[in-house]
Length: 159
Image (spheres, rainbow, N blue to C red):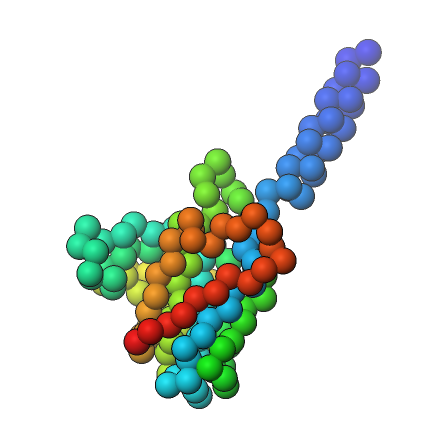
């Protein structure tokens, strides 16, 4: 009887964990970025991060990034409008999987964020030596939530 009870508990626990792992993904719709004609030949990166904003609203570079949640996406800018495909972000806790999306234009590929105090966000696997920023736009998570994933999120860069 004990073995049957233990076997039932193990099976039920595995089933609950498997269902939880399948459901714990946040989908961000495709993001369409326009206003890029002055940056053709540069690289546009998109990262979903957990960050603490600067207390001074005009000082965007003082955002302290604690964690990058999925490998950043990158596009070589060839047109005025570029589109990032939808992104699946794993939800690892009760908190939101990210609170900002960062759009960064850099002249070199493989951009990674460096905080203003010189620290690098986790995980180390997403860190590179390219921290050059030509243009930066943080987008709060609340602006990326849509009722439907059928429609692109549109962002216009105005340097």
